[in-house]
Length: 294
Image (cartoon, rainbow, N blue to C red; front, side, top):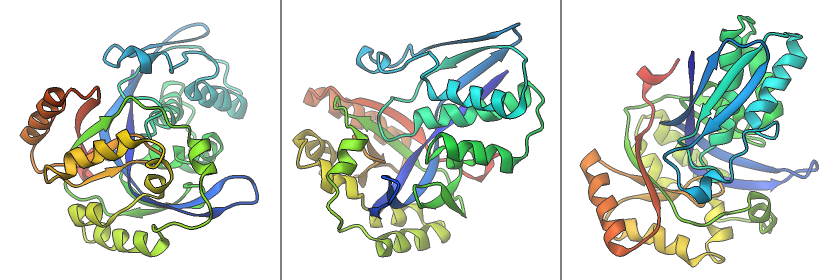
């Protein structure tokens, strides 16, 4: 049995303050995309977990553990603890989403593990039960459990669904830079040019199913925090803006999301990246439309 683990982009992200529990409050628009991993489930007398990422470069694959420390395995153990289920499973994770990229790849795997085990072991857990477990695993796991379009506040786990418009072509571009999310948050001084008002504007465009306008109206606090430290990120974004393509950074970075009108534009851009000598991983995908949602 296969369970897809679709990733996400952030169409704008504002850090709105620091919390007493050490986390930060954010205001963001989540949008699920077709780029995703796959979890494969097969009958087995015990729990066996394996994985590979044949299409990702080595410097990324070595960041992915196929051990108990993987968030997908943490989701499995949580299901076992909650239900008392003692069934086995051989589970293989096929990674396609770059790790540590601001795309929620690990969180998507955790959400897929919850959904997959619920079906594979016939647990009949309710959506509310799955969402409760998801929120304990990570801030964006609840969104990735459902997908579509939503505004996320709090740590990102308080969700308000938004209409999902037509699918949009995207080029996902990951420079060869690693960003520590904790370090990026640590640079937040208490103010940002990106505010709740910014996200209100983006939300209104999303409600009207005007994705292109929402995209171009968005902004990301993390660009303020990490661009001064990493000139290559400034250059990466400008590379596409100079060619007339709206471009935003997703999550805490470093991945850029380039909005396209047709797939052929992505192929031309990939050729431009290669010609310019940039060692950036680029992946063509689309946003989810209503037909793609469960």
